[in-house]
Length: 327
Image (tube, rainbow, N blue to C red; front, side, top):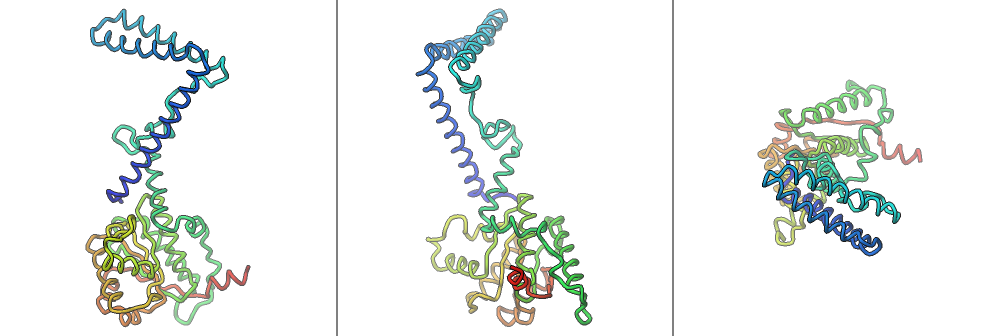
């Protein structure tokens, strides 16, 4: 669940920029007040001078001097607030400006990550996942079972009973994401039965828990692998092999729709195998059967899937077509 170093650095740079912007705004307000309120700048000089004297008094242990200086500082502070109000400004107009007063825009309250930092991680992961907008619609809150028929199909459970079982197992995958033995999923089924939608549902829940998720279509995945193999110097930041191999969950959508060749087959195996070695989760959706996967890629790919993936077969009518007809 930990961010990669470059991801952490990017978030911390955002905090640096927030502090710089707020400091600039504070200085602008201060210059404005000094210009419009006569004597205000002199009050600030007196406050600074008394603060220095109070510090020296504390070091020397002069309790009477400390008390007198604190009384003077209170009087000066009250006068500043009075002047601000008299000239139409809020009394806290020159207080330090923070987006988050809890951590004062550092990201940490003491040594503990502030809630705003945790939210920044979630927002960052959404942006990195490449499916921020779609997850607002495609999540379990919008999942509809009525698209699946309750009519049994031969000896198999009905599409409705089957999808209810699959969804339950998906929730198990989410709840026990860190400790289940087979922390990978293969969604199989014809086009439009909800494989991608379910992948998005899982992604949404895990991102809310601050896990890093990367979604790629099979085209995007193999383009990235090709870029890394043949044009490594031009590899774009944020979509590096480190990101691909170290994200908590990688979603490969529509495997089998890309132009297949020996390079694609070998790279798929290397990617899957490396993530297994690093104990990172992967979800693959495909229209291909297990036999077709072995034929299109390799027996090694099928072997890794059979040994390390939960295989969920989803069937029913084409939901995309049904939605289109409804519209």
